Image 1: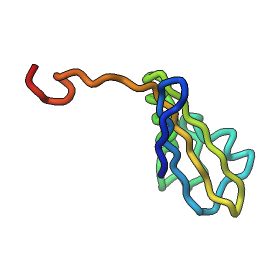
Image 2: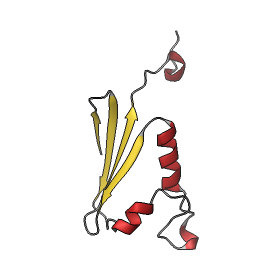
Image 3: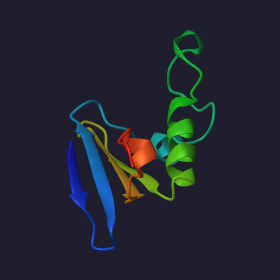
Image 4: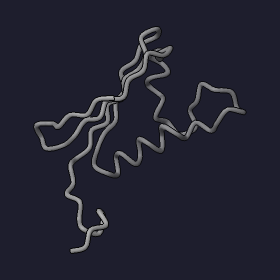
Length: 92
């Protein structure tokens, strides 16, 4: 995992693994609701679709780099926000 501030005032979080990786065909569809490469008993295929939607609603973006036998890297970019006292639990 790596996090870095961006020149535009946002932050990028990069999450990488050294797993099997994905083919181009799979990578193009991973954010589609109900798309999965797993068996029907293993899940609904909603996980990455929900992540994509939540990050988008927060004003950010998510992208993936992956290739078979090379693992995957997800890059999440989000705008920075100033925490209010209500969010941090501190008294005003």
